[in-house]
Image (cartoon, rainbow, N blue to C red; front, top):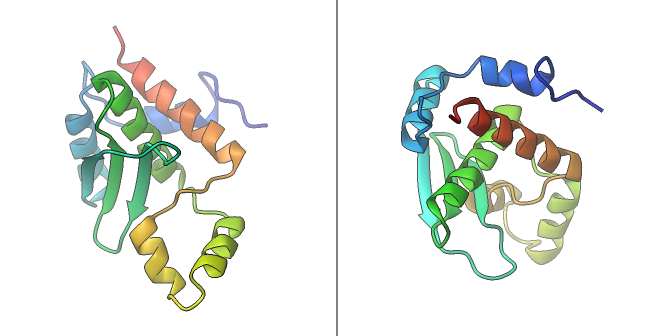
Length: 143
């Protein structure tokens, strides 16, 4: 199991980021855009019960970070940073996700489905990694 403490791989990712103090999601995303030379679009949305409250979708032109609009500002920020963490860690959807999509929509191009739906099925270890990195990012700038 990878270490996630002060010297672990997640801390190394955090050290490579330019963090606004105090933390501001818009400024953080703008800094990442400059670092990565790639647009990031923050998009609040209202999810339904049982639906994901956040989603990262990478397209050829930009990364889209969707986060729940109907929650507290702190929680919405945490959801968005969790999705950014998936992006920074290079997580991809799982083979099981591909199989589910193939069953549900066998006649639709899988690349198009991925583009539209994004990555909404991660392994448990990827969820833990994203949550750890999100928590480190937010705690680094906490007063």
